[in-house]
Image (cartoon, rainbow, N blue to C red; front, top):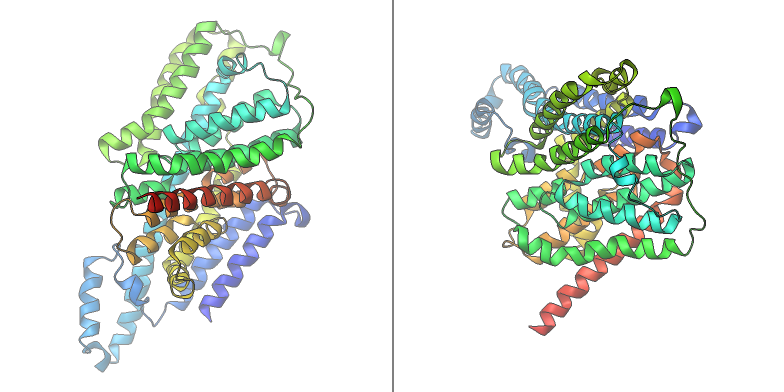
Length: 471
């Protein structure tokens, strides 16, 4: 009963998010309500019972809980009436300390990462740093500009990651395209490009990083096998879309007179290249220290913050005020952060009760074909978080490093989230930056995302078949 209630609340929340404009309720409010409601239902239902066997063996279980589990398995506790109350208290403490606190820690890491990346990008923008790129992009046709931005996002996401790359490229698109509908379309294709680019690098997407850390993939092998399918995932929809797009883009009007900032060329160049270096330093920091990515992002933010405070000292009062970091922080879209918090809380609740792992195991038993399982996981990752699905797959299978299943799973989990705008962190970031409507993305972008996803998947399977027959 509890399971179906959780699923019902989750689906209702998704529908409310999708119909944000129709019902007149901001998606952040719907997402927060869904996340809190899911955990509340779980907390109320856990009284008097212990979590399932899969949860009892989770790595987050404290030592005292392992002792209690052994005690339970011995059959001694069931003989006492007091055991029921002890079990209820223990189960609830496990929910709070072993699951909710653990989930909140992971979610907070993602939110701090997004907050840091958004602030760096906004700070570069405050110093008009994106002029360094926009002045060099001469393309005015929609087709040419779309290809340039998409390919930049594709390769940038392999060096940074798909989330940071999306934030940078969507912000860049705002400087190049004034029409909102066209800019939304560009942002949607940038999401597809960033997710495709992140799939072929072990630091480009969180699921590929998980498989790398777990010893399932090696960096050079995944690059060699997945760069072509990932590129096909982007190029095929871009090629088809190129026949549909017509006309040129109109750039936003540049500020003149009193609104124009009094900045020297070296100041603009300094803040742009420093911002880019700070973003690139994040995966380097993670590799060297093994600390979570958000720690590197916060360090990068502090570095560019220091430099910005020094540079702005010699500016006039108007420019100094608009480049103040506190002023920049006020321009960050807080509602998108809260939306992300709510939706991740809901998904983590489903993972905590074992629903996502059960889903992955059911796929294994019902489908059987490993390639089809990876393909379905990719589609599912557009609706629910791909991390617990990939984590369940890592526990279920014992294939050797760089086995075809792990490589295909990395591709599918990394690119499948593009099918819906809330299916990936990159999509959620773009949704917050540009206020993209869920249903608009479904109508205008999802088809192209699915086309690219299936094209890349077919390319990978054809490559594997060719290699196997050739050998």
